[in-house]
Amino acid sequence: MTAKALSDIRVLDLSRVLAGPWATQMLGDLGAEIIKIEKPGIGDDTRGWGPPWHGEGEDRTAGYYLAANRNKKSVAIDIAKPEGQKLIRDLAAQSDIVVENFKRGGLRKYGLDHESLRAANPRLICCSITGFGQDGPDADKPGYDLMIQAMSGFMSITGNADGPPRRMGVAMVDLTTGMNAAAAILAALYQRERTGEGQHIDIALFDVALSSLGNQALNYLVSGEAPGRTGNAHPNVVPYQPFETADGWIIVAVGNDSQFARFAALLGHGEMADDARYRTNGARVENRDTLIPPLAEAMKKRTTAEWTDALIVANVPFGPINTIEEAFAEPQAIHRGLSHEIAGVPQVASPLRLGASPMDDATPPPALGQDTEAVLRDRLGLSADECAKLRGEGILG
Image (cartoon, rainbow, N blue to C red; front, side, top):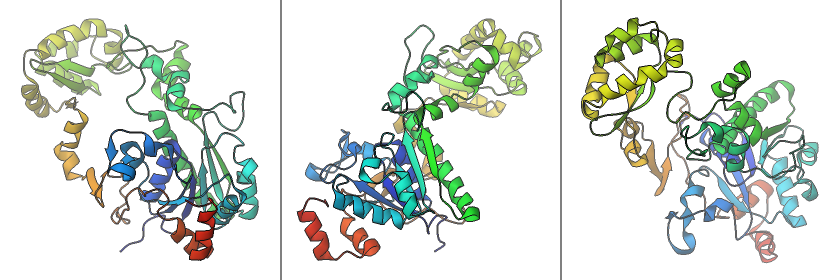
């Protein structure tokens, strides 16, 4: 079998909840060995973030935890005890990467901060994920996805114009922070090949959120006017929104002027493509108030199925508004194997598909502490008796 891209990389994962685990899961999907350190008896907070649950009784685990922790080994060590800290330092000395999401400076009291770890292992790449970064007036504040969505402006542009601000339906700031962290780690690995030295990576949810505003951030910086909520309509592209049909709804995403001409003709309004008010996208944005109503009325005259067939023929981008159940039932989702099981545990397939390193032989999210003894034996040379003694002292789970 072809080795995976990161099969020679070891990651010590001191993170929990979502942003850090999402980053390390991506690295694990790419073949890295992920050693996840968890608190004995409790583990990652998200193990208890249910229902829904997978399994029963004491063995049940929240779906939330299962979403971000495949391809990892769980090692239960009490980080608050000196003996536990030494075990973690010893593991860090043999690792390529450490990922943590403690408050700024929170690991220093344990001797596990990036300066201490890199002093013993200069090749080590340490990635710190916090709410606001390692400096600045808010650096010591905790950061959670919802509060960052609010502070960054995301909630001000999410929802209907006449309604209250809304959060996104998932913790998207956490997820994008995890992806940015993984990208930075991969860049640091590449740089280490040239320099032989690791480095510290500072990733902040707030920074990621502002950078993820994308076009809306530049809409403000260019115009000086803060964008508002536009519901499901696009601020910069028209028509790009849901339309009601005779029996439901459908999304139409017109991305250029030729697509608009075909769409308008399909709806019996071909003259709009020659009208100076609608000929270009910029003009359509400025005149959306007169453009959309006749298009919306025309869309109500046929069913969703009829429009589906017609839009395919006209080569106009569109899509159904699915529930999550319907999304996983899409023929494309089935063909790509996006919903599958690993050893009986439901999973969503990784989108990272490298032709030379297939995504098979994945392992399911681990039970709390299931790999403790094996990792300490194989990596640090501890005997079964030594592990039993540490477990009796409450240092291991």
